[in-house]
Length: 158
Image (tube, rainbow, N blue to C red; front, side, top):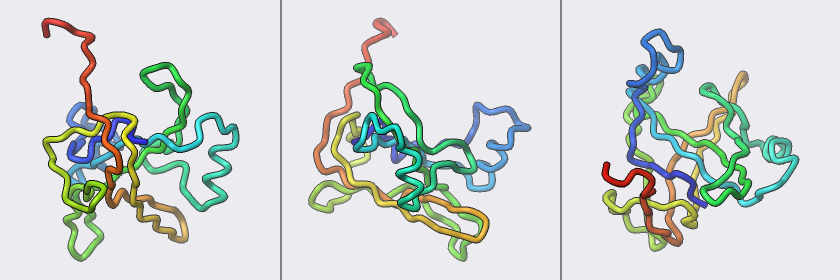
């Protein structure tokens, strides 16, 4: 399920202090597209062990990838953080750009249509396993059933 899905928002770390390690990493890649997706098992006590057994990294260079949290209705959920750098300086063709987003029929997504929490999605990841680390890259997402994004009305008059 989609949980705060933002495939077109490029985080450049502009709000981070200049001496931040994370900001330095973001500058090398010219920013990162990132989001959290809701995993299909909510109260699994062994979620981290389960994912590790499947070969899926659970922590990354920029923090823990698996997180237990609550959705807007107060339900306990487990989310997984996926990201994609805008540029990968070590690649021959360094420009990676945004993750590919398509609808259920494979048509390119209209960037103006925001994807709401709870939308059914299929996420494509590229998992790279090296001798010292594993990396997960967000390749794309297919929106199988859209739940329209509805902004919170918490701050009337703003």
